Amino acid sequence: MRRLCERLDSEIFSSCRGMRMLTTGFWPRLFEAKRRSLYEMDGVGKFRGFRRTMPGVLDSDVARLPVAGSGMGWWRASGAILLSVPLALTCGCNASANAKPVGVAVAIRAPLGLPPVPIPAHNPPTASSIALGRKLFYDTKLSKDNSLSCASCHHPKSGFTDARERSTGVGGTTGLRHAPTLVNVAYSPLYFWDGRAKSLEAQVDSPIADALEMNQTHSASVTKLRADPLYKSLFRSAFGTDDINMSRVENALASFERTILSGNSAFDNYQYEGRKEALSPAQIKGLAVFKDPQKGNCAACHTIGPHYALFTDGEFHNTGEGVGDNEDFSDLGRFQITNLDAERGAFKTPTLRNVAMTGPYMHDGKLKTLKAVVDFYAGRGNSNTYLDKRISTIALSGRERSDLVEFLKSLTGEIPSNVGPPGRD
Ligand code: HEC
Ligand code: HEC
Image: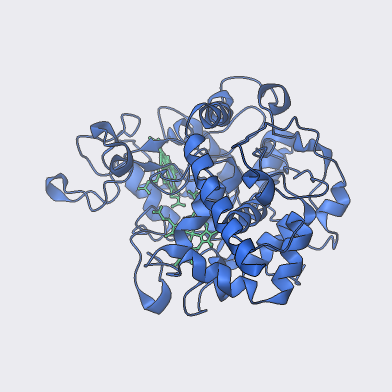
C-alpha cells in the first residue's frame, strides 16, 4: 500500500511538473500580466481592485491582521471566506487537487499602505496550510545536516534577511548573493535577484536542493518529513490526506510567506492617513528628495502610488553595483536568464520596506549602510554601458543625504506577530 502511495505520489509530483511546464503557456502569462499590472497601476492611477481584474485574488480588506501583542490568530480574526473565482488549472489528473489546501480559505489582510495580496487560484491559503508553512519555514529538517532552516538566512530579527554580505550554506559554504528580505514578497512578479523563479511556490525548490544553501535532495526532504508523525497530521489537516510531497511543501511554504507583510509604517500614516506628525521634519524633506525627479529620483524605481507603496516596480535595472573597472561584471544578473544585452548587470529592484533592518545592501551585500547606498546613488552608481538611464549624477548636499537616510528609516513597519517561530505568538 505504502509503495503504491509513494508511486502515486511521485507520479502526481511529476504530473505537477508537467502541469507547471504546461502552465508556462497562456494562464501564467495572464497571471503574470495581471500581477504586473499591479506595478503599472502604481503611480499612474487609481488602484482598480483585483477582484474584477484577476480571478483568484481576493480583496484583502475583509480581514485585519493583528499586530504584535494583539495575541489573536489573524485567520480567526478574519474568518472571511475566500470570495475569489477559482481559476481552474487542471492538468488532466488530480495533481493540483492533491496539493491544493482543503477547508476554508482565509483572507490575508494587507495593512495600511499595501495593496490586496495576490493569491494564485491553485493555492488558496487556509489556517492549516499557513501554520504548516510556518513550521516548515523554521524547521532545520529541510537541510542536509539539519543545521539550517529557511529562517537561518531569512530571520525575522534581521528583517527576514541574514545580516551577512553573502549567505552561508550547509557546511559553511559561501553563497553567490546576498539574501533579500522576504517582507512583502507576496507582491513580487518574479523571484530572486535575477527573476529566475516565476512564483513563490516554484521558488521553494531552489534553496532546499541548492548545494550552496540547504543542500538536500527533495526525496531526502520528503523522507525526513514522512518519518515525523506530527507532520503527517499537519499535512492531513492542510491537504486532506497525510501524503507528504514537494508540491505540498511548496504550497504551504508559499502561503506562509504571503503572510510576511509589512506596512502601517510612519511613512504610511503620513502618506495615506494624512497624519503629518508621523514623520519628522528631516524625514519629510527626505521624502521630497526621494520623489523629486531632479534630485533623488528614487521613486522612479522604488514606486510610491496614490493608494499604496511597494517601493519597487518589480523590474530589473542596472545600477552599476558590482561592476568593476573595464566593465567586468562580477554577476551578470538578469542577463543570465534572458540573454538580453540590455539586461547585463540588471537586478530586481528590492522593496525598501523595513530597509533600516535589512543591511548590508544590494545583491552582493557590498554596501554596508544606508548612507553608503545614498552616496553610491549620488555619485551615479558605477558607470557602465548598460547603466539604467534613470540613474544620473545628482547634486545632493550632506543635509539632503542625511534627510534621505532618515526618510528610509520611516519605512520600518509593523510585522504580524504570528510570522515568527511557531509557538511564540
Ligand atoms: C543559505 C541561506 C538561505 C537559505 C537557507 C534560504 N535562502 Fe532564500 N535566499 C537566499 C539567497 C542568497 C537568495 C537570493 C538568491 C538569488 O537571488 O540568486 C534567496 C532568495 C529567496 C527568495 C526570493 C526573494 C525575492 O524577493 O526574490 C525567497 C522567496 C526565498 N529565498 C525563500 C526561501 C525559503 C522559503 C527558504 C527555505 C525553504 C529559503 N529561502 C532558504 C538565501 C537562503
Ligand atoms: C533605475 C532604478 C532605480 C533608481 C532610480 C533607484 N534605485 Fe535603488 N535599487 C534599484 C535596484 C535595481 C537595486 C538593486 C541593485 C543591486 O542589488 O545590484 C536597488 C537597491 C537599493 C537599495 C538596497 C536595498 C536592499 O535591500 O539591498 C536601497 C537602499 C536603494 N536602492 C535606495 C535607493 C535610493 C535612496 C534611490 C534614490 C537616490 C534609489 N534607490 C534609486 C533600482 C533603483
